[in-house]
Amino acid sequence: MLFFVEWGKDALRAFFWMIVIVAILLFSTGTYSQFIYTDF
Amino acid sequence: MIFNTLTYGFFLLSFFLLYWFVIPTKRRPLSLLIASFLFFAYHFPLHTLLIQFLTSVVYFLGLGISKFGNKRRLVLLGGLILTIGVLSYYKYTKLILHTVNDFLTLLEQTAKLPIPDIMVPLGISFFTFQYVHYLVDVYRGEAPKSSYIEFTLYVMFFPTLVSGPIERFQRFNSQTHENTAKFRKEYFFEGSSRILIGLFKKIVIGDALTPFTEGLQTTGLNSLDYWIAAYAYAIKIYMDFSGYSDIAIGSARLFGYRIMENFQWPYLQRNLSLFWRNWHISLTTWFRDYLYIPLGGSRVTPWRVYRNILIVWAATGIWHGAAWHFMLWGLFHAAGLLILKYYGKYFYSHVIRVFPESRMTASISGLITFHYVVVGWVFFVCDFKQSIYVVGKMIFII
Image 1 (cartoon, chains in turn blue, brown):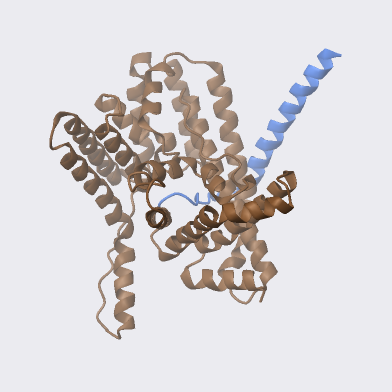
Image 2 (cartoon, each protein chain N blue to C red; image 1 turned 90 degrees about the vertical axis):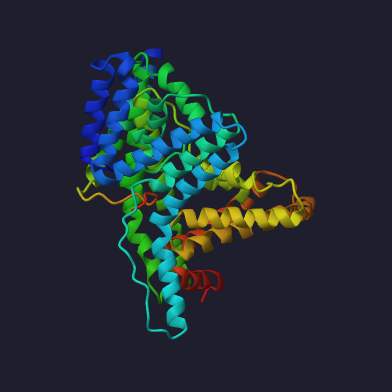
C-alpha cells in the first residue's frame, strides 16, 4: 500500500512538471516579450 | 541577456556545468564574475564599462569611508551624488526636457529644447540601489570588509543584475565562500524547478493575458470592459515580475546562492500596508531602510510622518519609470496608506464592534485591498490623461 502511495506521489509530481514544461514549450512562440520591470 | 530566451538557457546550463565540474573551488567567485560580465556585455558592451567604472568608484569610496575619520560624511555624500546623479542623468534627462518643452508650448513659445537620444543602461535602477545600500552600510559600520572581486561580484551577479531582487551585501557575501565550496544536488533541483515555475508564470500566464489588457490603452469602452482589462493587467504584472524573480532566485540557487524572496502572496493580504510588505519586498525594504527611516520614519510628529510617506511614495513611483503617471501611481498608494494609517483604526474599531474579526471580515478587507491595487495599476500602465479617463470610467461606472 505504502509503495503505491509513494509511487502515486512521485507520478503526480512528474506529471505536474511534465505539464509545466510542455506548456512552456507550447506557449513559447520564439518572439520574446520584455519583462515589465526591466529598464530599456 | 534576457531570461526568457534560448540564449540564456544555453548560457546558464553550460556555465552551470563548467562552474561545478571544471572550475576549481577557489576560482568559482572569479568565474561567476566573468560569466556576469559576458551576460551583461552580450547586449550592451559599452555600458559594461560604465557599470565597471561605477562599481570601482563605489568600492574605493567604501574603503575611503572606513579610513577618513572626520570626512566620512563627505565621502558618503560624494558617493551618493555620483551614483544617484548617474541614474538620474540616464533615466530622467528626457523626462525633464520633455516637461520643460510642454511648459514652453503652454506659454505659446515656439522654441524647444533638443531631446538627446540617451540609452538607459540595463538594470541601472537596480544596481544603483545596491551602491547606495553598500555605501550607507559601510558608513554605518554595518557592511563587512570585502575584496574588490567580492564586491564586484555582488553588484554584477548576473541572476540579480537586471531587475533584482535587490539583495543585501551582507547576506550575499557570506554565501560567496560558504555555499559555493561543494556541489549539492539540491542546488540543481531547487534551482531548475524554480526557473521552470518562473517561466511558466511569465510565458504561459503573463504573456497570454496581454491581449486582455490592451483595452486599457483605448477609449470608448464601458466600465466593465475597463475593469476586466485592469484585472488582467493586475494578474499579468504579478506573473511577469514574480516569474522574473523566480527565474533570478532559481538561477542563483544553481550556483549555491540563496537570494531573498521578492513576493509572498501580495494579492491575498488584508490591507495595503501588508500588500506592500509582500510585493517587491526587496524594493520596499530598501525604501524603508534608506529613505523612510533616515527621514525620521514614523517616530516624528504626525505631519512629518505624512510628509515622509508622500516623499517615499513619490520616489517609489518615479523610480518605476521616467513619466509622471508613475508618480501619480506612487501617490495613489501613498493616499491609500495614509487613509489606512490615520483612519483605519477608527474605522476598524467601529466595524469590528458590529462584525467581529473573522475569516469573513479578513476576506472582505482583502478584496477591498486588491481592488485598490487594481485601480492603482491603471495609473501605472496608462499615461497621465488616459489613466484619469480610465479610472474615472471604472469608478463612476459611466
